[in-house]
Image 1 (cartoon, rainbow, N blue to C red):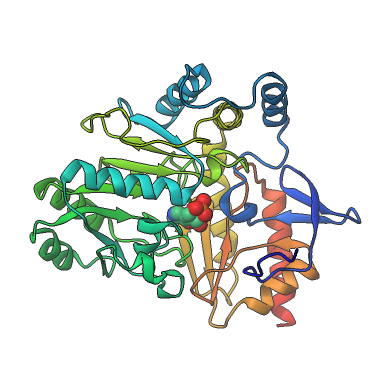
Image 2 (image 1 turned 90 degrees about the horizontal axis):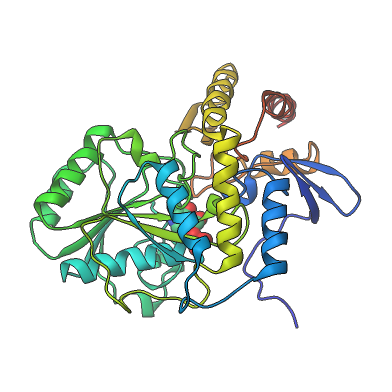
Length: 377
Ligand SMILES: Cc1ncc(COP(=O)(O)O)c(C=O)c1O
């Protein structure tokens, strides 16, 4: 049976990984500055993570959400402590799209309203409401078009005010650093005013931290760079270091009711063991401090390269903008220098999303390769 051919593939076959590197079937080493799309937070095959999953799968890999599961509670408590989101409640699911789907659904349940405000160039996933809130008509099927979503420009505060005052908006969903769109950010003033307008108009303020969360921005959540308190925070990617797990953090003001949300696989024992190992490692290895230090170093070197016209993003969620499309540059980096980087909707942007364990030597290797690739570009 052929695979449904939806992904353009690089001709590389990683078969193993260790911290910042993956290795192909010939043992060729690749430096991973893409983190499998911002997923690898604590490094490939981290020993604590491998041990936790191995022990758990040998003991009890799965049971449904109909029983007591102390690992879910341990994960929720650790997440509360590390994120500083005191009093929030946790609902667990399996992916980023599912997290946003539940976030939007909960916002609609809570407010009794159905229209969503999202922003131009946003990406929130591919399920029904999440894809409708994604600014890419090419991936929105007619069946998703029933959702009512209004897209506004980032920083268009008058537009947000006008739409919210109509009284029918259940949620504003925000990526504090846009991922797939190309690392754009609203201003501090904009985000804080949107939050205030949400409060005034009985609208839920949703922070999509699927990509920017779990320390990637240098704080646990990217919204924590601003003075806002989201009603719902969606998480996935770095949460499981590759194990499929997602979730939403729900403000204490939102009351749970039996049956309101649900899932078969979400919060299973194995996923929670993986998630807990990730949080413990972020704490024990001070990976948020490392993210900040390495981001400063990365940006300081990037500033010395004249071909880089703009450095976007924050922490270890960075974009290097050139005045040419970077497709060929990415190919050179991967095939000639064995370095993975990411692309974006903005074709002139090279995305850098490494594991949070990155060190100066990896950054130096990257910039040596980049300089040499730019010479021959
Ligand atoms: C900000 C953001 N939200 C949601 C998603 C969807 O996550 P998933 O692919 O796990 O469904 C992504 C994926 O790239 C993302 O970057």
